[in-house]
Amino acid sequence: MTPKSNSQARATTNIGDNLNLRTVFTRPGEATDLPKFSMADDMLLPETAYQIVHDEAMLDGNARLNLATFVSTWMDDEAKKLYSETVDKNMIDKDEYPQTAAIEDRCWKILADLWHNPNVDNAIGTSTIGSSEACMLGGLALKRHWQARRKAEGKSTETPNLVLSTAVQVCWEKFCNYFEVEPRWVPISPDHMVLDGHELEKYVDENTIGVVAIMGQTYTGMYEPVKQIAAKLDQIQADTGLDVKIHVDGASGAMIAPFCQPDLEWDFRVDRVVSINTSGHKFGLVYPGVGWIVWRDTEALPESMVFHCSYLGGDMPTLALNFSRPGAQVLLQYYQFLRLGREGYRQVQQGSLDVAQWLSSEIAKIDAFELVSKGDTIPVFAWRLKSGHTDNWNLYDLSDRLRMKGWLVPAYPMADDLADLTVQRIVVRAGLSHDLARALIADIQTEVDFLDRLEGPIPAEGERSHFHH
Ligand SMILES: *Cc1c(COP(=O)(O)O)cnc(C)c1O
Image (tube, rainbow, N blue to C red):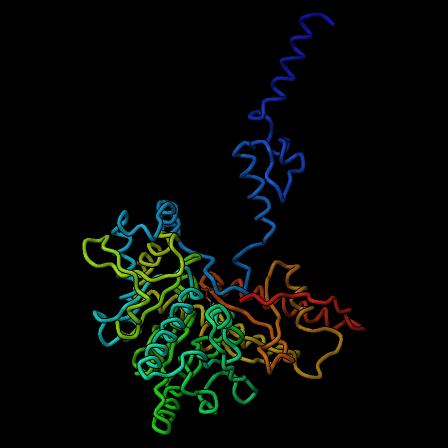
């Protein structure tokens, strides 16, 4: 080899070794395996690390086609811009970001007003990471109240219980488990698909810290009739003297009913309702994660749960399970309140309700199916396989077939007591247009026809589907 060709060879090797010049997918990391469950010794170029994470997230599928989730998958470009400008804000830094704190305050007051709080100046509320945290706080306030009352009466505080439907979202099971409250499950049944006050007197006693009413059951979208539950509790109070309050879990419905069913009385118009939560990231139309809780008045929130900070010059009450959490979502919530106003929210939610009801009416036309709900409360509905239609396939099989086309349409068993009943559910969110809905129905029809043509049963595969709340 001549010296010249030697140095040429070296130069080529050097260029080839220069990671910056290598094409993306030929770099270590993309071209070679990286350890997945331990930290690598060496660094990667940021572009390579980005590409790896980006590509793996791509395998999750398209969030817009995920009809299992209640959580926002679409916001407009201005919201995205605001999001990227404010990702660095920590909600807890109320001294550093007094404006974000002031905006948080405005947001829950807007909600208090929307939910007909009779005296917003005397109400109290907060943002949370989602409805789950909000429900923990709501449940804790009920528990504290009950404890204080029992102590004042010189009675035991050993065995608190909470009365709720078996169809509650899992966060209430967590609340009861984590905070040691006995759940008093009121079973759902074909005649009582929701908690409606039926036989409530059998569940309520002196150790009951409260009753949870759900505006928009996770399983079917149905509302629990808050006013009717309250009337039953009035009756129970007249008969027994027990004064039991209601927390409304309005994770979805508290952002639908005020705009689309304004005459339905489920909120602070009902005297027994002491607190209401919602998910800002569901029909509040914000990306995950933000939730809200508002108490009727400062009396409903025991002082012992509030921590006082004097950051803003005045007295800043704070209550939450988390310390640090993103402030951007709170700003995005305020953005949506400004951008949409009441009329905008009404349009968006009514649009989703229209699509949901169109979809449910099309599903009802398919011979194999029977609707469980229609999508006329929140834009969520469920259906079941008509009994006797087939033994060859079930809704899990249909869910699998639809997944092949990119649609995520979960099938799952109903809550305890109706767990033999399998249903399939669609959550319509802003962004599921009529066009997409039409494409979805065409795909469902095609797959049902395919499954109906099978000459024998599809073998069971164990647990094939997971219920997404
Ligand atoms: C989604 C949901 C929750 C939990 O809300 P997150 O915001 O996801 O924490 C609680 N209750 C009901 C009725 C829900 O639909």
